[in-house]
Image (tube, rainbow, N blue to C red; front, side, top):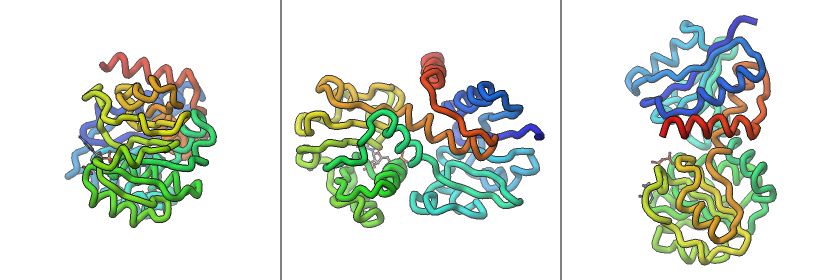
Amino acid sequence: MAERNAFVCGYPIKHSRSPVIHGYWLKQYGIAGSYRAIEVTPGDFPEFLAGMARQGLVGGNITLPHKQAALDLVDEADAPARKIGAVNTVWLEGGRLRGTNTDWLGFAASMDASAPGWDRAGKAVILGAGGAARGILYALASRGMTGTTLVNRTVARASALAEAFAPTVGRACGWDELPAALAGADLVINTTSVGMDGGAEAMVDLDPVAAGAIVSDIVYVPLETPLLREARIRDLRIVDGLGMLLHQAAPGFERWFGVRPQVTDSLRQAVLDDLVRAS
Ligand code: ATR
């Protein structure tokens, strides 16, 4: 088989860990292929996608700020991508550019691996109502979960998402109602960028949550966010954001290179080492 070349494209792109993940798998499975980071400005993005075949690229990942634009630019976006409103994985098939979104699969797989039974939560609370929240909600919907509470700084955004994802979301409210929303919660998921880069002290008081609750954060820099630190101190079950990053990469790799890769502890360590080197 001819060497297959894939990419991750964003603007800026230097923070992407995807080349480490896919490079690790290419080596591990002895595949003659490449995966490289390509910086593309929003203005150049349509032309970049249209020129993939000409550049010898079979597919790739799309990251910020192009995920929403990609939805309109691919020839065919599948149902998850359309519902989430973003494409993070593309590939050429029969001369057509196809797109999907694997963030929701990555989240569900990471939760399955680290907190099995998470999808049987009786009272789930999601913090945030941006693009990332849509992916998480799609994952919850795929497991038939209903009645989740969505808490967001901008209430109107949470309400709009609640409407789009009913009955997965049962209630939308503002940050001021967070303590009440958390009362008795057994699953708490942060989808906001709050807590990134070590920032402020814990933004969330986890006192009201149920004993043994699962607390998950999609942020992975730092790996232990203020929310997860709060959770650890209270002896709650923790799922960090790195698992989602690793698991969302697997379906794309399989599409481009034909091998379903495994998410292992040594892959996780390779990415952690890279994060330390970059810090
Ligand atoms: P993403 O695609 O990563 O979800 P986004 O669409 O910009 O990014 O959404 C960011 C989320 O983090 C939103 O829910 C945002 O709240 P608003 O809708 O009120 O803007 C939330 N967020 C970002 N900074 C925040 C802060 N300092 N405090 C509370 N919420 C914050």
